[in-house]
Image (cartoon, rainbow over all chains, first blue to last red; front, side, top):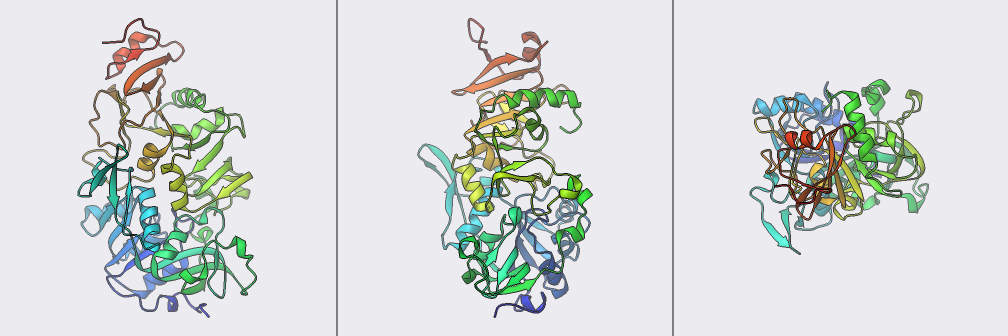
Length: 231
Length: 220
């Protein structure tokens, strides 16, 4: 069985200096319970691959950042959290910025065993500096490298005991690609069901990608009110 | 862009809405583009959001908010018949692959040949690009909505970008509160004046030479 009793136990083997992918677009689809466990776990000098680093006020990965555990962040949009901007300005956090689609595809490529890909997105811009560029069918492309992780922390709606995952609506975002790109993928879910109870055609992430499963203890509505969401 | 008077923003959004055709798959940026749906016949286009949804409806009432259903502005939206969800890698494959018909997006500068700058300002830490480069490079048609000038009067339509580029030669149309331009084979063409606006005013406030569709000879 892949189901663990606690989120902290599900992070067994995670060590200082590792690369950890964390799903979510803002807080939607972010594994908030596992992020809290990662804060409790204490691992330092982490490289975090995530679209952004939580939201202001210690929400999501913002809490891990405030604890000083993140050395480097790879993502696409950190501007919306002033705490991230401040950490960069203090020299405490190194940021690698990628166009959002390049980030998603680099994670997908990592999980799919590719050595990289050429994309027209960002070619000729500041974000292509230092990268190989090539004309393909008359259009400039930039070579992007795959991303892989020691651990991937993902959020889903339902899981069975094998680790098959189903996501709810736009909760999917980066989670399916990250589930495939982590050496150890841990999924946090609202509902655990028996093997055979998930209709096979509805499964988004097949179980071979998922090593451990825990129940979600923290939901997005616990950290962000409906009024804040609508603001 | 958020401090612009609502009337100016509405004028731009209303005109930008007329760039959309029935059945288009449309991705809207934040700011003025987010106002466009108010001027579109409900159900006539399919809204695409890069965080993984195609075909969604308006902002829900507070008691109907689903925290797992948001657009790329992280705003709660609603499911409509035909709505479909997918992951980020698939969503950006749709954008890069030319399957999104139109992106409507804001800009800091647009050049006469259709280059666009809308993600970085020199002197500030460059910590966010989001989906801007993907949308600018990938959408089949790119419609830019922006005020014609900066608050201090500096033109945003220029011969050459002075800000870091987002993408090159990709802009198809520029809608401002003064005029509508198209970029046709690398040439900037004024195609329409907003009501009450004169050609002289547009010339004065535009930092690039342009052709005028109705003019007998191209502008110098």
